[in-house]
Length: 71
Image 1: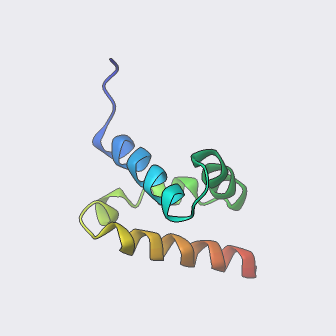
Image 2: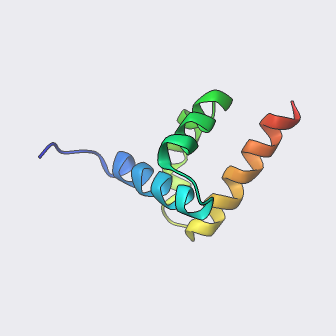
């Protein structure tokens, strides 16, 4: 098995949980994030997201998405 970083492992967990929260697939979520250009930003929020309740990350991601759709 390949060793993956804690950050990558958490990102995968966050992606899975967010897809479940949105009742859609991981592929759909990742495609949306990629299309909006926020995947790297979310990945790089590890230091903040992994110490908070996951719902706070969901709220933050929802706000990022909303802001991108407004512009």
